[in-house]
Length: 317
Image 1 (cartoon, helix red, strand yellow):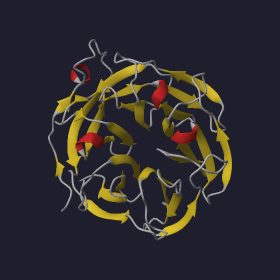
Image 2: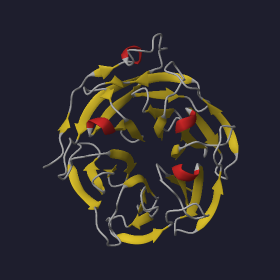
Image 3: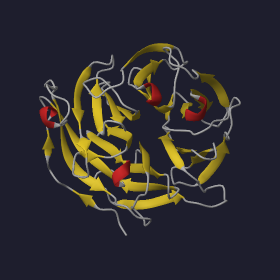
């Protein structure tokens, strides 16, 4: 069964996005629901547990489907299902619980397997090339890998079980670790996503500390923001993360069923969403992706077994 891609065309403005957050400032950002991709099921284009995204230079949206062990591939503009790879099995190309995903500048796809600790590298045509890392706590191992990113020939992998970030080169060679468990600045408690901004800063959703933390590419702590709550700038279980070309930081919250947008220093800009199953409503949010080419925001609406896509409009455009 093919994925559904349904356009609703409902404008969701900054002042009407959150039922439980009042007084949202005019941000110059609005979000129009463009399409819904997928539905619950095991067939091609259907989902059971959507996790995270990557975009390719070929116009493809790659989606990790953890429960069914697939990486599913869609046309990023139309939501049309194209193909899938991975799947359960014992062969090198198979996956058990794919969660994190990233694409390097040459189009190679890296997939982090939450249960096994493996990171698998595939060709731009989705053929298996390499497996590295494994489950554990030693350097070069990981436990419960999450939403990763690539910059300057290095892969940055959040390691939930060890409360740290693991760094590898793109041939799978382990390079270094930074951070570790704790609540002090620069320490982590279940880092869910690590994504780079345009200035080279690495933003990390610190899920169980209900905050954002920012590091440089060598793992030095720079700054952070957030505290537990449901108000503007407050966070409950921040999970998915995306950063646009202007450096705006989009943070998904499992606990508040919304997405908040911040500037690179952590000042609140606006927010999107509420709990539910309609367009612009969410349940158990996970990964995010922003496509700067099309100004599209993709949202892993995990509890509703779908991907929602929103057109981002900026004031004056």
